[in-house]
Length: 390
Ligand SMILES: *Cc1c(COP(=O)(O)O)cnc(C)c1O
Image 1 (tube, helix red, strand yellow):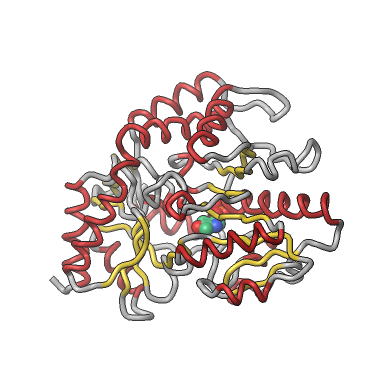
Image 2 (cartoon, helix red, strand yellow):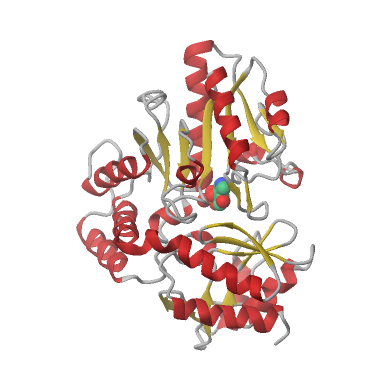
């Protein structure tokens, strides 16, 4: 199928919920992707932070094909080895106590929200259910995670939304403190707001929020769907911030391209979700968890330790072009004139560089964590020619 045939056939039969670019991708290797007509793209997007070890990494291919040829699925009524190993490794890498496997970011956040509310209900009764999140946050597309998301544009059409979420101002501790009352059970936030514009929270603010959670026995829930799995230079971004969350949700980069999410709980609350209170049919899928083990193998084999260095390299080259940047590790926002980011991303894609918009003014870069310097330089050359007009 040619790109044009694909685009018309697809648009005739798939619901138009995405503003797609007129680009089809057929194959790739590392951070280089190829269209059906052979046009090459440098991948500074990784899907949306999903292809953490790039496209078609040999370890990923081997793990997925072996597992597909061995066992694709059992229900969660039985045990399998890939998810067992993955759970152990995630706990070791994060210092968390136990894991629940889901299939997406929104579903991980649903699990985190259920865990927080049950923790509070078990201890304090059924009234203490409010969760404070931040303005400009993004937590997912289910009816409950839309309610958790602190952006008004998401709060339309789908009424009634789940009750019990209040949105405080990021990096304003008084706003968070004032939003907490006797019926609050948790505070949930991203440490770098991704969809909101690649906006890192201040370390001092995050530590104050942590202290407030300890003082009032609120669960500190960190949404690491985008920031986790090495994206920000440490395995989880909370490790960079030096805090100890009660609950961490993750997804995007964990399966290296396959759908997988996880909710991690610290000892404070790892026994809260008991048999019958939470489940999902596909959770802990052997192929997805085998893929995640391959992702961890590659990250541990010298990739995670170079994320900050690569992020600093990209940012210094972009700042030399005259732009300011923000972010953490290989989660980078290039600040452009407000409102021009969408057109700029479209031009960059057309010129052969895949990147993403974020917030009101950012060109967002989420390259594969194992991107090479040669691939970064090819992407930087496209950035320069498009953003600086050649
Ligand atoms: C992408 C994202 C989600 C939603 O993840 P899905 O897999 O699309 O459900 C939730 N939280 C954050 C911070 C995200 O970046």
